[in-house]
Length: 302
Ligand SMILES: [Ca+2]
Image (tube, rainbow, N blue to C red; front, side, top):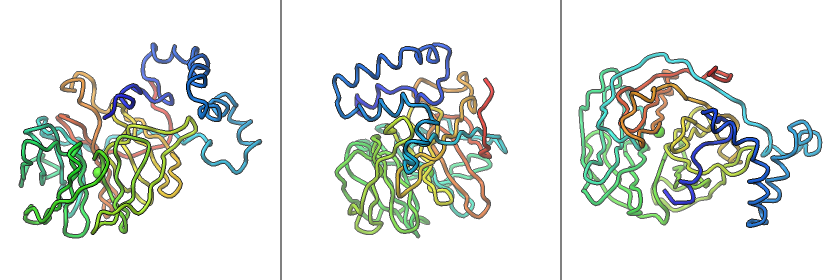
């Protein structure tokens, strides 16, 4: 969670407050200032200042600048969730949710009954590790840690820790596409890694029509797309894996009202997909609820 990434507090696609909306008027000034300090930003400025129609007609082959589709949500079910769980990773498998939690001294790997929130198995991490994303690959659960550059592999049934491995970035989110692990580190880059050796197989930069999308956090591979929570927002990016292009934004604003959020860090962070039942679950850090939602096209009225 670098200082640079912390500076971006709200994606411009979905400004949430009147105050943020009012900033739109000074955006050209900010972009101009960024050009003075970053010559590489010139292309981005040109893209942001051009109208969508102009971009479409002048650069018909450019998919990177097409505006992502906008989605909102419908709540199917709401279930209890341990509000002590600082959720950093969420996976659905065979009737259970598997959850990785964070914070030093409170990090864990959990098996949870979705409908009740009951924790049926828990494996604490040593207090020097800040747990991050998890994924299930075959019979193994893989868990990242934040800055220790160390990950762990567990037996899915027993939670026995089988081995550890190292990597060169921060660890944020992790999922897989059946062949490769897909890992985030809070930057706009997603890393593809070998599920056995954890060697990097490739990487892709995630961009929407406004440029690189930073703070990519918890991940879930859903029907050929990568879903990514954007840290400290209510947004999930729908990402085309091979190009990194954001093809859609899911706005989950209002899903858990502010009065039910326990602390300023109680961010949306947890996406799990039941591929057989076509169910999508989301929750957040210290959220008292877990939601099954349906993603629907459109913009939520405010
Ligand atoms: Ca996930």
